[in-house]
Image (cartoon, rainbow, N blue to C red):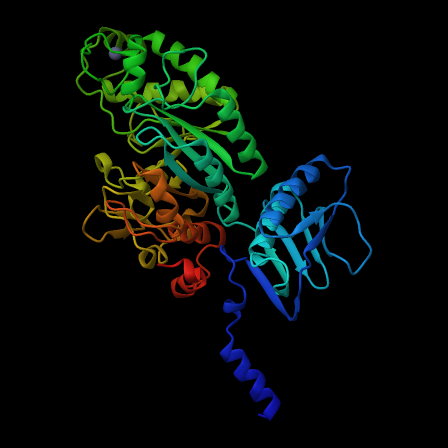
Amino acid sequence: MNYRSMLVMLLFLAIPAQSQLSLVPSPQEWQLKSQSFMPDTLVVLEFDKTQPALQTLTQTLRRDLADLGFSASTVPVASGQASVIELSLADDPDVPPEGYRLTIDSAVALSAPTEKGLFWGTRTLLQLFESGPGYSVPQLEIMDYPKFEYRSLLIDNARRFHSLQFHKDMVKKLSGFKLNRYHIHFSDNESYTLPSAAFPDLPTENRHFTRAQVDELVRTAKEYHVAIVPEIDVPGHSGTLNFKIPELLCTDAPRDTLVKKICIGAESTYATLETLFAEIMDMFPGEYWHLGADEVSYDDLECQACLQRLQQENLQDGGQLFHYFINRMHDFVKNRGRTMLVWEGFDPHGEPVVHKDILVCPFDVKWEGHMPHDYMDAGYRLLNTAWTPLYISSKIYMTTPEIMARWTPFMFGAGRAPQPFKYWQKYDPEEVRDKIIGAQMCSWENLEKAEMGLFFGTGPGFPDHGRPAPRLQIMAERVWSGNQVSAKTLLERLGEAYW
Ligand SMILES: [Zn+2]
């Protein structure tokens, strides 16, 4: 070995490639070149101005670059006076859906087959440009795409109301880590937090959005390619619905206490829910609807309407009536062009068979003895929302980043606080690759001000809320990149954000 090759070898050992590319999530394929690129303060975005999709995308990018101290223009300037970022939509058979290519040499070139892919590419670019003008970034080539299609966070807006500003900030934060769904739990026993023209008394006083606020949130979400998935939890967790619309109650339900489940026998229930859901679907355009459908039992039926429905539909018991309810709501949702999600709870082998195109979110991993594999074996596809490590709640054991980093979307954590949990993974990931569409972190009952810390590890901690830590970045890594990066490297890459 001569002196020069020894020096190269030493340099290689001294500077591991990972430390030079601290992107989260890590790209699928990347190659660093030996030189660096110095972005000017003035950045010119070049793109085909006849494409409306690119107009919107570049407007968003200009704003985001301005936040980092750049001045981004779409008007060409004399060469040498500005850095050029070229954005283009182009067919590319080697780039999967949502994928993109990014090349940085003397200029920046970003291309993708879809607008969405191009947008994720801009998120990578923003991470590289994070230090602002005058800080060099490595010249490189990236080819990137997500491993999982559904990458999500849930916010519980019903137990703790969250401001419009929080939700807008959260949408931007999520998109920065290439998360593409934002599930909002809008209704529960504690409150109903959406506006309603059809049921004007329904929204909880001082704890609901106006239609104009909803529209503003939807606009932001669209710009940032994050789909909002609304949930009005029924038939359980429906105390507020019952309180405000007593016609939803079973005939035998008490009228003087908060009842946490609605009647699923009466035809009027279906008419009410369809009116309400149609109104909400109009507020939140998109391809998904979350029905809730968790933690509820119809075992001891005494309601006349429910008993009559059993007879009419030839159903044996309340469990079957519950399946009937899910299927009827699914028919409504599907007719409106959406895919429905439910929490775990129904019997995967029960009658009538719950429609197989409903996506199931296992959380407890032992509720009524139904395990994730029971749903998968019966033919359902799953969104991993398992309690551990994906539940973020001050009331229960919250997973540390060290443990989270060893998780993958194929693992479902069983067990609750305070004992350490066990991961449950029955199948080889390759066997069930098509049955798990992604993962979602779920934040329950947390104070709004504590959540940036709990998810991203930024900001102060608060008493009774857990240790601030970059949990969401870790999930984002695993749903986008898979597990090609070791837990140790991932934690190192989170750098200063890691508490
Ligand atoms: Zn009933």
